[in-house]
Amino acid sequence: MVLDIEPTSVARAGTDLQSLGAEAKAKVGSLFASGEAAANGHAGWQSSAQLLACGQAWRAQLEQMIDYITNVGLNLTSSAVQITAEDVEAADRIDDVLHGLAGR
Image 1 (tube, rainbow, N blue to C red):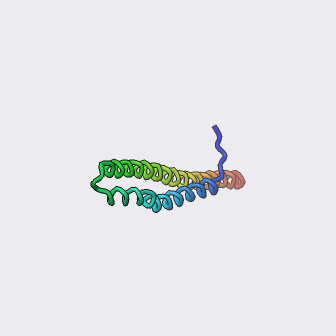
Image 2 (cartoon, one colour):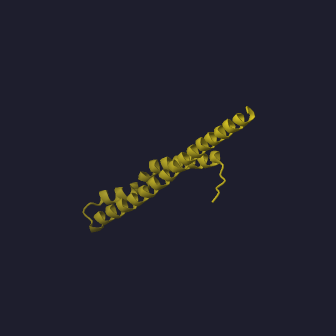
Image 3 (cartoon, rainbow, N blue to C red):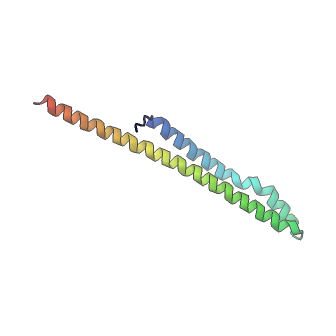
């Protein structure tokens, strides 16, 4: 199977995913601030504990997805770097062979 990719584009996509992950990670806490404030402001209510638990569960799920997306970005970037290095190595080997043949 032959894969024809543009490493620069793959690396850019990986970097973009990592940046988006960092932005999302920074903002995720604010999504639950109003629920936490409501639960803490009405601590005697029976629903307060459930509201906090629900918010914590959703926050954990979002953070897990953000971490996954960030890791995908890191893996894309790493793959692009590896492919570029392998392409350079292959080109160098071909040049060595061609120069060897030309010298005969």
